[in-house]
Length: 106
Image 1: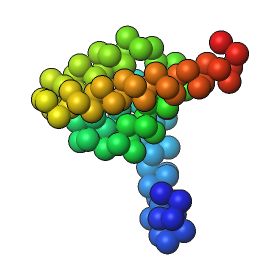
Image 2: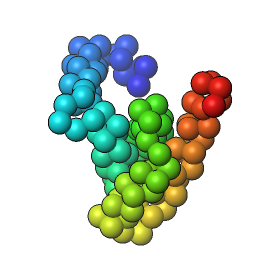
Image 3: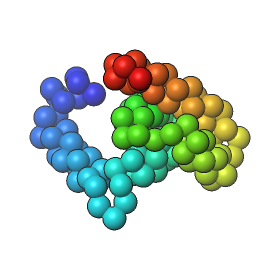
Image 4: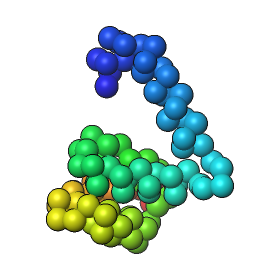
């Protein structure tokens, strides 16, 4: 995305603003919004999105159990392909959570 930011800075700045507005705390917490985004990432099979939103969910305090339920919904909505990507997402979350916990000393 860095190269796209250089090539189309106005578009990417607008996209960044959209992301900030969409993930801001509101009636739904940012954590809940990241879980939704992770579920959608799995359903649409976007590897980069899975990595980004798995890390964001971990940063916002999502538990493995919350991730599992989110991925269960993705499989329900997306069938077999989502089951494959759900496994990838669970592994990504576990890795991201371990990195965050290690940095925080926990």
